[in-house]
Amino acid sequence: MESSRLFEQLNTFTGKLPHQKLSKIITITLLVYCAYISADLIWKFIPTSSEYNKITISSSSLSGQNNTATNNKIDISDLLSINLFGDLKKSTVVKSPQKTDQPAPKTRLNVKLTGLVADSSNTTSKTSVAIIESAGNQNTYGIDEKIDGTSASVHEILLDRVILFVSGRFETLMLAGIEYSTSVPGSENKVNRDQQTVIQDPNPAQKSKPLKKERLDKRENVELSRSLREQRETLFDDPKKLLDVIRVKPYRRSGELKGYKLSPGKDGKLFSEVGLKRNDLATSINGYDLTDMQQALSVMKELRTMTEATITVVRDDTAIDIILAL
Image (cartoon, rainbow, N blue to C red):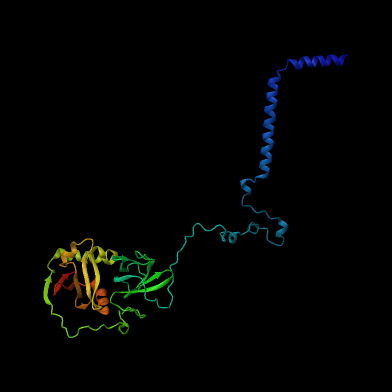
């Protein structure tokens, strides 16, 4: 009897409780507890920051050694130096093709070497340039630059030739008027004349008409002299600007080099002020014969220190000496 009353009182008490609120409280409590348990499990599997890069070694493995702090450290510098994933700080070095000891054969490319400015002490100097004619167009090229309209690039610039790199091999492009030879002029500007072909005059009995002589002295033109000095320094600092002033093309008659045809470059002002005209044929500078390779190299070597220059050009059967102060 008493137990039935107790159950009736309990039912009456529980019926008065706010069941909806109690269920929400119990649900939230269980969610919080579950979140706590999950977080605790996760952090057990994830090491803390203090455990990063830490190597633990039991003291038993170090028996017989000093118990100092340095002995408990492991040097992994050798492992790091392997650079398993590459070294970002190391730049890639592109090596240019190395020239072999064998002489490069004469090129079969349809190009002409009409002029060059060469550093006799360094065949790959960045100050050396070659004037090469390709597909009827003349342009200047430095070391490792590709020649227009071809697959060839300039590898070396010597005193009388250019070494080209063509499709994996080296080829020689001789300066116009110089026959191909395996001998290269040294710093003394010596040319192996034994390798050059001597072309005889097809009509030795026919005498050429004597040329008239004229003289054009421009030394008194102070402004012109100043401009020439400035232009000379500019060309030695950046030889590629040569074609902005003047264009040079070898001229042959009966297969023999007679001189160099001159024409103005992009800026023809200085060209005309000097007294030159289009298609003038330059034959000598300060008495050096430009059709002789040895003499031409000699005058180019002295050009930077010249204080005066006498350029001899042939124009309409007249030899004109143009004298300039530098």
